[in-house]
Length: 324
Image (cartoon, rainbow, N blue to C red; front, side, top):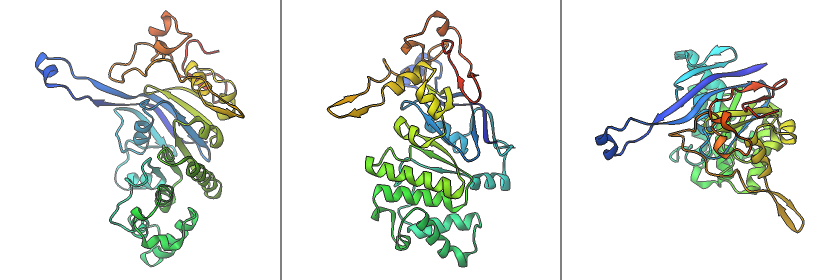
């Protein structure tokens, strides 16, 4: 059953113009951050969203929680229109859908103790009475494997991995149904990344959470997700079950990303070069299929038509004129 349904949402940001361009009367430009994205998130699953830096993953995440208001399209959560919510309905949505950010330090108030940070979330959403907030804070810290005395300390007293655990505890404080994690381990050491990924998986199993996990690291996606959505220059180009997509990707961009994943073997390191060429500017996306300037399979038709994200059997969808 779909918990979150996204239909054709787009988000553009006005680009700054140089004074010379203004004097010459050049038209305003916009960054095409998200372009007509449609996807579903099923209750209880982990959906991975992957792609190169600058492809729009973080903007999409912020649109899903309404930190950015989309320019168009629809978002429905549990059947309810999210973009039309105000007042109590908006607050309820904010409680049910929480976000974990990439920078665990920047997302925490350095002037508040960990206990005060977690208690604030409890009080704003009236999760427990004030008399029970201290006990609930201890439970939250235990959930993310931090000691109870962490409540009396400030964010700067913790390591990056510990601060990310605090960020996860804050998201859990309001008892959400869906957590959107935006590159939650990219700022951490590799050894710490594994511990945080395992924590997400443990919490999902224990609490019945639904997760959207955004990353550029396909190894993490392969390890922890049920389905994968691949983004390129603001668009979803392929969605499919994780095991099937890694075994037989259909979009040329997905194929290139998977070939580029390094595989370490005794005595040598394997892994091809990343996708050929540079990511085009989101100020001026290529016509037709945005990937065609870098695609080895492209022909004249690829530059003339924007391929629709069409179903290729079950929940597998591909946006490519050349896909089988």
